[in-house]
Each structure stands twice: as structure tokens, then as C-alpha cells.
Image 1 (tube, one colour):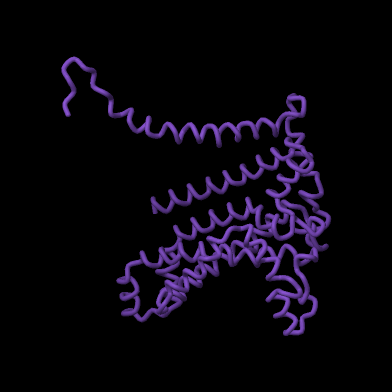
Image 2 (tube, helix red, strand yellow):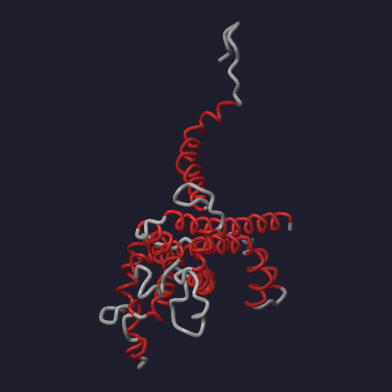
Length: 304
């Protein structure tokens, strides 16, 4: 409809901004302001005076954060920071490798979509429920894993894993592989479906075997997907909280403590918001570094 004579024309450029205004207000109130306040708390003392890096130093000197004298010769606890690194070192290759293997196996199998749905159930399961399932899975009397090792004659592993310091962290990591592998499998399945079949047909004509086709066609084509899987998995491992809280509450004796749970204990058990804010800031810095790596990797892939 044409504007009436003498009436100013409304600028169409402002419409998107007005539509986004409610979301921007919510982001400002629920994300930006709390993040700025957390950063402020990390650098001031209880009286509001500038404390510099004192809270960060106190957190890093806390044996619950870092116990270098115990790693790797003694059983856990090694400190929440080391436990998070162990999560990344074990959980990342296991979930990525299992997700890729399941995507390859179910690609040509009849009923593969139904099987992928069952695997993906772990991804949509609430982590609180996942923590309870892990407790039952590794329980001496009701668990499948201890029963399996009991039948194999390995009595040292035929007990409640979450009750022993040397087994609690591996139980959480192995149990969470099922919960997260479905995510990697779905992304890899989508990546495999996007690879042109003509590549494989040309390779078959040239006599290439399965390994050669995987090495020269499948894996290079899946590099962007792998970057997404790695970035999202590491971020998930850094912020892991509810699964550990439900299954072990960081125990026994801090043997499965992680940074996010330690931040919660600082804030709501020790009533020390400054140390909690310091841990939150450290986690945010790690997250930003991973995000920066992902962006650089994605940009390099687009240029390549």
C-alpha cells in the first residue's frame, strides 16, 4: 500500500531490529549482565576492593583443583582440573571413534535408521537420569559391567565402581560414552550422506579397496563434521556437571570431582562466590579458546 501524501515513509531497515529487540533484551538480562557480574566477582574481594588474581591463585592452589603430587602415580583424587583433562583425553576419542564406526556400519544396513534411533536415545536422555543409570550399570549387585567381569574371573572389577576412587572416574567416562556417542553418529551419518556416490564408483573402477576409499574419500570429506564433533564434545566435557552430581557428587573423596561441580560447591556449599566466579572465568576462557579454534578451522576449510 502506498503511503498517504505528506505522511513520512517508515524505514524498513528498522523492522528487523525491532523484531530482535525482545531477544536482545533477554540476552542482555540473562547472559551479558550475569557474565559481567561473574567476571567482576572473580577480581574483587568480599568488600568490593580489587583483588587481582588472588582468587585464581587460591583456586589453583586448592588440592581439590590440582594435586600434582598424586598424578599419575597414585590413584585419584588428582584434582578437578586433571579430572577434566582425563575426561577429554578418554571421552573425546571414544565418542568420536564410536560415532564414526556406528555411522559407517549402519550406513548400508537394513533398518539402520531404527538402530540409529536407539543409539540416539542416549543423547536425548536427561543427564540426571543418565547419572542414575550409570550408578545401576556399575553397581556390584545390579550392574551389568561388574557381572561381566565376575563371569570373566576379574574380581577386582566385579564390585561397585562408583564406590572406589580408582574406578569412579572411569565409570563416569565410560558410562557417558553411550550418552554422547549418538550425537557424533548422527552428524557423521549426515556427513556420509552428503558425499557424492560418483566418488566411490570411480574409486571402485580404479580398483581401490575399502581402506583406500576411506582414507582418500570418506575421511577428507568428513573433516568439517569432525571439527564440529570435536568442538562440541570438548565443550560438553568441560561443562559436565549434572551427570557427576547425580552419580557420585564428585566422590569418593573427590576422586571424580570436575571443575563445574567444584564451582557449584564453592558457591553454594562454601558460600564463596569469588572462588566460584574464578572457576567460571577459567571455564569460559577454555570455552573461548575452543570456539576460536573451531572458527579458524571452519574458515580454513572454506578457503581450502
